Length: 382
Ligand SMILES: NC(=O)c1ccc[n+]([C@@H]2O[C@H](COP(=O)([O-])OP(=O)(O)OC[C@H]3O[C@@H](n4cnc5c(N)ncnc54)[C@H](O)[C@@H]3O)[C@@H](O)[C@H]2O)c1
Image (tube, rainbow, N blue to C red; front, side, top):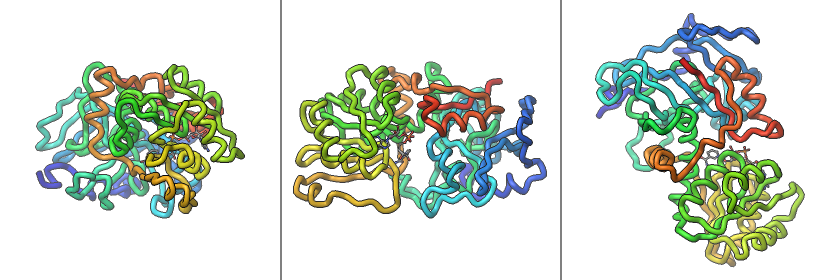
């Protein structure tokens, strides 16, 4: 299938098409159009404003599908683009920029040449699509990833997407669960590449949404025993409530990583063979390295500071491997099967729900974990 037929020509998603459209304007604070034909979305900009905008109503072209986005999760990266305006040196908010990449929705119209989708189909939306034909397509530098600047995100009422980058939701998966397929795909990619096996003792560092889905996936893959760490007692309590068999170790920011590693070993009763690191914090990566056994693997899913130190001699003298994960490839179908088949229950992760019109409020809750959120979702019904 060529790019045109597949609906993946980059010019179709040029962010300027939205920004320069006469229909585009920023809504005043408190302005809540409740007419469902109005395409509203949540945007940020280089001044760190966060607001609703009205966008043009897109028309699906050849190979494209028009979606009503029904559920979207707020990811830490969405909050980061809003509050810090950038992630690293390449992903920089330089203009009005739409947020959101964890979404599920409903097909409302299909473009020319689309045969696999019909109005009413329910889908999980793969937010990134590459222009390379590599199997590990997350390696492709030439990618559109909705919500990574300059591309606008999925946190919008209506969105046009390439038909080839949608995944069918079976009837027993809700839109809320469908929107969690994205973070679950991150965890599954890590577990696949870490080659977690039945009975492996596993450490999970961090009990944020990524740590929690990683915990659920590691459990489904047969990890035992499992220890999870976090700075925050309520997040550890959430993990324990969800997976009663997990052992928890609370960390304090000033703790020495070697001492934390000793506490982890004590809680586990042995040294983990695998650490799935889900914070990206330097001290936590050090803790993971000091925790695993000789020949173990520290698999870093977390994203952190541009330059970090590593305890090189400990890694070297213990033949510990250090690996990383960048997004995912080919994980959505597997994630959907695991949720549909009942092996992974992502439902409890959604702790807060907001209407699309209240997206700004939703971000205030998502960006402050003291408000008790794990996953904040934005929903838009009929
Ligand atoms: N590799 C990828 O493709 C990918 C994709 C999505 C997210 N991520 C990254 O995964 C990480 C987790 O994402 P999230 O949404 O769960 O973030 P989050 O900020 O909600 O959760 C991180 C958790 O780590 C805890 N933490 C921080 N420092 C710690 C320490 N020293 N020891 C123990 N716990 C500590 C925090 O208290 C928090 O609960 C982030 O770095 C995020 O950028 C990576």
